[in-house]
Image (cartoon, rainbow, N blue to C red; front, side):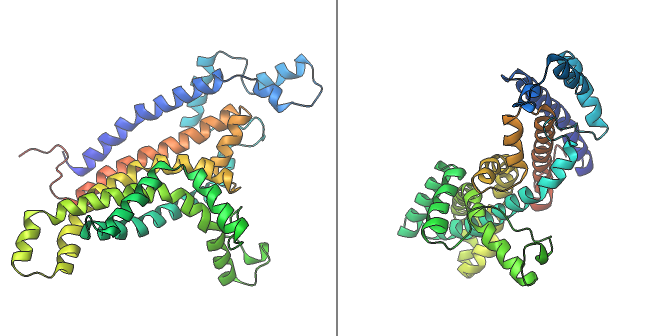
Length: 332
């Protein structure tokens, strides 16, 4: 079939998935109890005429199916709508909040990979030893504990009790040090790391635990393979066997987990941002739900859904470059 044709096919298959996401989200958002206009005007004395004018302005008086078709027509033109409560384009709000979320998610993934792969290898090479037992306990706790709860515990220990790290907000490395009152970029980088450390660990613990369990299992299977036994029979050093033979083969499932866990990381970012008072897309999503801001809810859902689908497609395509045995439907 060829890699290019396969990629085009996967993109076409993703279109119904994204449409389904928008339909379900649009229906659920509109079926939620409450009136977004009355929530927006809460505390103000207004009459029914003012409410009707605002509903006409945002098209809320029209039937549900007409509103959906109009919205999707605008989306295809690059318009994600206008926030009712913030009176700003949704694209502008997302662009403003995307930086903190991307920094948080990418750093959480970096933390997960940097810790999970070495720990998984150590656990596999020392199978059924105390080190292996400890790693499995850590992985079990990691996959069983919500990220927001881990964040609260980290705040209580390292921010409140010990006072080592800040408990809220982020320092953005792309801004000028003068905006924060820092002496220069080295201090800006240092403060960025300090503010990012706790939310990064809170969000990345689940990813780390999942990757570590998969890495351990795959390394054990690789070390028991016939090619490894043959290499040992030829006297190849154990370190070389781990690096060149067992490790490379074991990484293919890791790539799959990274792509599929993107939705988990984005979902965990919602509550993690709320716990650490980070003004990212996740916190914006919670605020949109609380205020029934339909346009904003839909815009965020489309962006997150698209990111997840693209991540899955990239994961599938990556197989071709890592494992030459993958043919993508080609037959001899």
